[in-house]
Length: 629
Image 1 (spheres, rainbow, N blue to C red):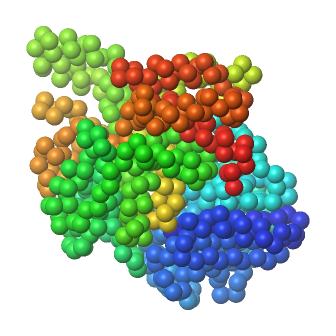
Image 2: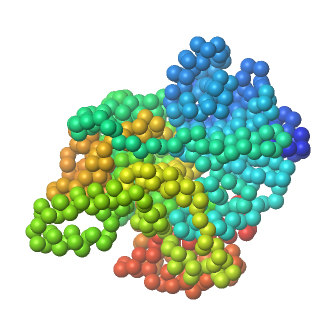
Image 3: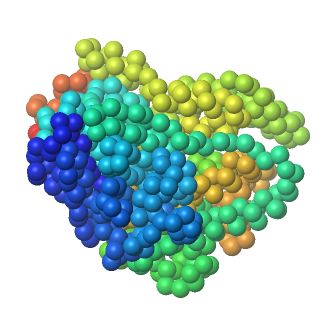
């Protein structure tokens, strides 16, 4: 895994010789093994390398034979050996064993359609001196980040915000609409960033930029398509096929020239990955997990079960209130406000892993692909049917209840239109409009009208799917890429750790977009409503039902407790509220913030909003004090 950066200046010359050096240096944590720079005419590209494959000859930026094409690339292609064989047959000559060179020759052979050939995670920029243009692309799911900055005289790109802030220009102004979107969702959604003139290239998109400054795109090259298989396949056959596909993906993600391990929370997804990893390798696997001093939310005991059963060496660490002392440093590295509190354990488990290996596999993506979140079940049933459910059960009309449930599923799956506002309230909204209206000062209330057009377009496209697939499609175009994958990338690359995601893979996507809805969400009298039905059935071959059908816990710290009277998060937030010079005062009403803090207790949980505000306030102070670079 690596960091990439570059700048194209339209005036025909690079005026600032140390500009690309500073941009690249800002990404040194992403690539601690090596750094490289290529400059010519009005183009400069930089690269920081975390060496995983082809340790000796994989140095970047890399060029083709005649140096007419140069690349800076972050990622891993899992089918690069197959592509290499195909390209050799077409006459291409290779000088290295790296997947980087495969991308170069793929671009030479297929042009911008080369991205359709790739299976893996990637973000890259190619300087093509044959056509005098820059070509940039991001992987199908958004596993790897790619941002760009638009200036009057330049176009710049990078893996992270901080590199783009080292462009020789004024620090860009804050995008206030992005702040409201952040308060709404707990992250700044793609394609926005916290800055005006800095944008995120969406997943499965590419761009072309002529050397004279003409920009084409972003252009979408692929989309996920939910279409249940019409073949009459039995459940047992689906389970066998599902196991085969996931095991194959795990195997494909194990290609490496360095030692590696696995994140093992003890949940369904990471357990599957770790179990198949042990079946494939069979020896000396290292697994890493984070627990909490509150045992009611800690899954270390389950991770230990998996480790003992498979002969895995398990490394653990406990996160407590004092772990929040690194918050300013963490906020700085995310580059913009990012309010998912599971960044904290993700940061610590990445640090723990990097002390032992440079690369790990993770179970991310299982919830989105196989419908593991409670929000999917709630979306399918809807809250206002709960009363009818209780009434029917109270009258012991079990058969009527089952018929009623089937009717609900049939009714909603036959509806042609889904309201994305209802889905957002069901599974996405962190801070509702009423609270945000009370938070913003009067001069900024107009910002509440901001619409996330990328999300609206996704909702319009997904109307053709059934109800569950509609919700999954929206999550793939919002929560997965803008939250989950961003969280993991920044927290892991902070420590120079590569994380691979076998459940977020093209082959696995072909599986979960075809399996019947009944293999994702199912109700039974013994276990109640269950998401990830297929994955749990696969796991039952290796573990008992008590392990498989336990309550889902997630990977979040005891956030609610952090804001109790003696909690460290409460202390930090109160310090911000008492600071008359803190930057948040420019935008927000103090009385609303204090109300949220004062009413937070064991019976009322405001910790989600309070956490989002705490991160935002830390970031605003870093921005105003010019400590963000």
